Image (cartoon, rainbow, N blue to C red; front, side, top):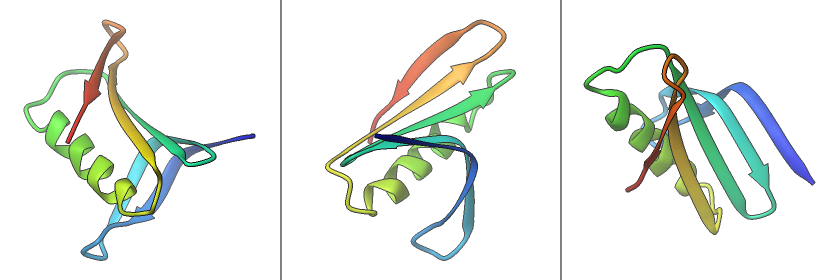
Length: 79
C-alpha cells in the first residue's frame, strides 16, 4: 500500500516548513522527488535538506531525486 503526497508540507528539525513536490511512502521506505524546470546552483542542497529531514522521521530507507522536466534528467541526491 503506497501513499503519494503532492506539495506536502513537512516541519523541519528547526521548525521551518518544507514543501516537498512529491513524497511517496510505502511501508518503511520514503521517496522524495523535486521537480525543476531549470537547473539552479542550490537544487541539490535543497533536496539534501529534504532528505535529511525526512530521514529523521524513522524510515528505514529514504531516497531523493531531482527531476529536471525540460530535459527529463533524473538525478539521485544522497547524504
